[in-house]
Image 1 (cartoon, one colour):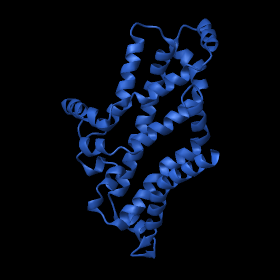
Image 2 (cartoon, rainbow, N blue to C red):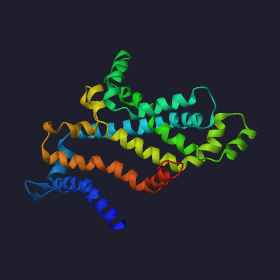
Image 3 (cartoon, helix red, strand yellow):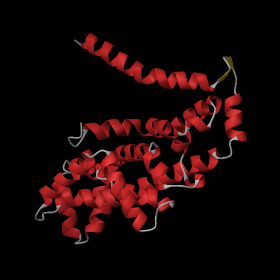
Image 4 (cartoon, rainbow, N blue to C red):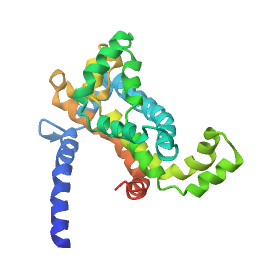
Length: 253
């Protein structure tokens, strides 16, 4: 049975890896011959690449940090606080998490338009800050924290903020790393939001650059796709061990 599972997982891994490997190989070729010309054209002649790349970094980093500020206290409330309707509200969070982007993007657009945030960085950042995914994951992890630690902290202070800082957050290190990786990857890969909410190319992201394949040559697109993968891969290799722990502790698997 283990051999069968190994074969199945190997085949599945190859299905995902081969397109990435093919993209990497083609990024180093020009008209069928090995060449770095695609990277030269992208880095020195394609002037929209750098603004879009740094926009992606800015949006993903800002959203990830802001989400953590929102996620941790919300998850703490769901896991430790007692208030009427908590279960129903958490179910609502799960329903929102399961909704496809296409269901929520139109209401988001209307709200951003009415607030005058279309074609601004806030039009991308603000809706993503309140994504329910991180709250659901963090809440599940917080349920595994020993209540005696929190009760001991409550004997020393009545400040919920201080309890979070001194007693709860130090125990969330593994889960925070896992959430950071998932949230950053989700923000880094977003395409529909910058395409719909932004009009100026100077505000758009690298994912839009790749999505608009018809506007560029293949010699530029393949190197752009390889560079697009690098930040998430760096985060994955840096947080890999913590990601595995975060998915196996706190009933998250």
